[in-house]
Amino acid sequence: MQQSPLDPPRASREGDVLAVVSQTGPTVSFFDAASDRHLGTLEVLAEPHELCFDPTQRLLWCATAYHSGYYHANTGRRTELTVIDPDTRRIVEVVDLAPEHGPHGLALDAARRRLYVSVEGSADRPGGVVVIDTETRRPIGRIDTDAPGPHWFAIDPAGRIGYATNKEAPFVSIVDLERGVLTAKVEVPGSEGLAVSADGTHAFVAAPYAGSAIASSGSDADAPDHDRPVTGIRVVDARTAAVVDTLPTRDIVLPVHLTSTGKLLVGEVRMAPDPASGLGRQTPGRLTVFAADTRRRLGQLDVGLFPLTITSSPDGRLAYVSNLVSSTVDIVDLETFQGLGRLDIAKRGEAGAHGLAYIPRPS
Image (cartoon, rainbow, N blue to C red):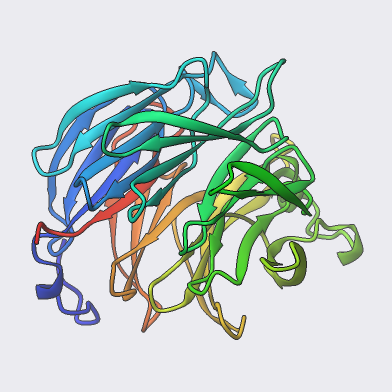
C-alpha cells in the first residue's frame, strides 16, 4: 500500500501492529501499523468475534462466540477465549469458561488486572459478565445483568462501573464492579456498541438493536420520519443512570469507539431497497465522528459494507473500521477525514473482518 501525501507521519507507528479478526477465517491477521504490510495470520477456533490487548501481560484475548453463525442464528454457543502472544503470533492458551457460553464483549481494567467478558444467558440463568484474573487467566467471578443477551461491555476509567448493552432487553445494565452487583437499568430500546467518556460521567450507547431495525432502514426511504426507528447514540448520565441526550444518525449504528483525543466514532450500516429480492442490499457504510464533550458532529465519510468494529491509534490520529460484509478495514485520518487505505481480510463465508486491536511496540 502506497503512502498517501495526507498520511500522518509513519515513524511514530514503527513497530506497532494492528490485529484483525476474520469471523469465518477463522483467523487473526497481523499488519504492520506503519506500512500496512501483512505480517502473518493465525488460525483460531471457529467464530472469533472481538479482540482485547492487555499491555501489562502483553497478551491478546480473542472471544469466540458460536460454533457457526451469529446471534439468533447459530449452531451452538462456544465457551472459549483464546489467549495469543501478539509478538510471536502464537496461541498461549485456550481458556474454557464452561458452563458460561457465547462470550463476546471484552473490557480490560489493566490496573486491577481484570478482564470482563459478556456472556449470554440460558434457560435457568440470565446473561452476565465473567470476571477473569489476567495474571492467572482464570475466572474469579460473575455479575448478572438480568438480560438474555448482553453483547458489548465497557467500564469507566476508574474501573468501578460497567455497562452492558442488551440486544433483546429494553435497557442497558449498569453494574458495580467492586461489589459485583447490578445496580441500575437504563431505558434504551435494544442496544449495540458503547463507549464511556474519559471522565466517566457519561456513556454513549448505540440504539436501537440493529437486528430489529436494519431491514426497515433499507425499505422505508419514503416513509414519514415519525415512522422511522429513532436511530443514534443515547447519552447516559452515570450519576443519574438516565438518558440525557441523543446524538441522531441517519442509519443504524453498531460500533461505537472513543479516541484518546475525545472523538466519538460511530459506524452506520446502510441499506438500499432491492425490488428483485424484496430485501435491502448493503451499500457503503458510514463513519460519523462527534466531539464527545460538545456532542457536535465533526465529520463523516464512507467506509466498507457493514461496519462492525472500530478502534484507533493511541494518539487518536487514526481510526480503523472493520467491515463485516466487504471483509475490509478502512484506515482513516481523523484530522483530515480522509481515507488513507483499505486492508483486505480473507474470509470463507459471508462474514469477514470483525474484531480489532491496536498493539503498540514493546517498550
